[in-house]
Image 1 (tube, rainbow, N blue to C red):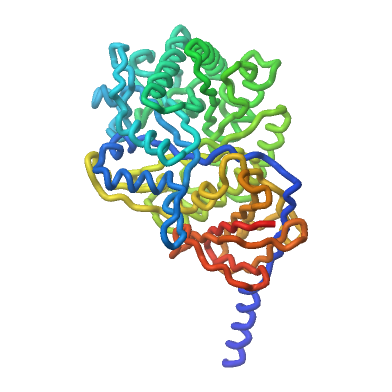
Image 2: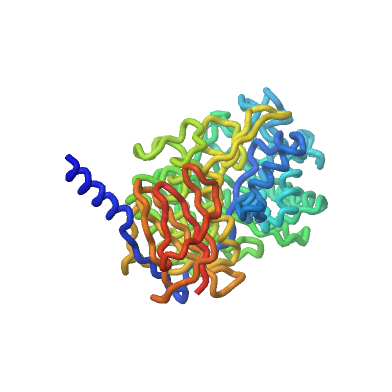
Length: 504
């Protein structure tokens, strides 16, 4: 028995210390990273009015780029903040038909169509803190037009029909331009406006604000918004179309008239073409929901999306919303709050595939602050409107492995593992050249396996100089660890996300 045990221990040790050679080619560039973001829906309306110490602590976790006395990041340094322009269901209260008060949202437009710029003050507080922390981009988005101009006077649809008459497209565009101008008067520069959210879904159950739209309606709304922005001399760019699943960007699938949005909006021959409008961003946004598992299928879909996007010169892809939904083919279930490493690893795999396979130039999480028993938050809170406790999740710090170090302007570069570009789902690596220093690289490793992996890193077959290492794992939250002199061999712990900063 002793001999068998010794042999088994040797085999495990060999596996544990098996080395993988990582070589990057910084001259082979892919997309430029624009931003990493998260949304203020819907909790910021309440948490933005919590006691100063708590709301400031949450803001620091989301926005800070500073480090503490041990060199550990104080926050994840988001580079974009998503501000939900509400439709006014909160003003309607229980009459809104939306049962969950936390999913109702205020609107700057009152029911009589006058403006009240004191509305959404909790959200405005968070947007101002983002600005003070140096968050580079502010995006405003809507789930529904304001109830004062919807067909049914509600913030959700009926019978799966769009909730805005065509004659009100201009009013909706003017409303959004007015809100952008109103926020700018509060000192908030709005870089992007997203007028439509997940137009493929029916939004008829009253679970939250929302409305379906057909492609020709989206085109009409965007054209009206473009005119309104120009009339007010605003520089804000328009983001379309927040597709509910990424495949709706390149195929109709089960939503004819609401899919194939790449070609519908950015193919010059299309009747819904908007790519030539002054304010339209040359990016198209989609959500990674329901397309992340199984792993092989997720990769295939993203390869298809990359190919389709590349057929439209100059068009970029933003992954603009994701949290863990559903059962994901048994890989992980979205139900149940989990502050631990399991959902963080799953999230990191999704980020990797969206960036390294689909070529996303932006990646945005859904709820920055969640009161729910669900895998949808970066920071979790007690569901209390005036005060409560808050809780950091590993998903927050997993996102930080990317957002804190891959800054706007970074370039993703080519990576090979043991001479191959193919990667195993158990060990995923992407690499980026920083905009600040041409000779500085950022590597992000996602080790979902149960064994530690040793890696040797080189740039164009030449050794790199490791500057810093940060680990998110079962017992570490984006923690800076000591660099050991080990002939450039770095240990990637089991079930961890690791960021390595290196010079070449």
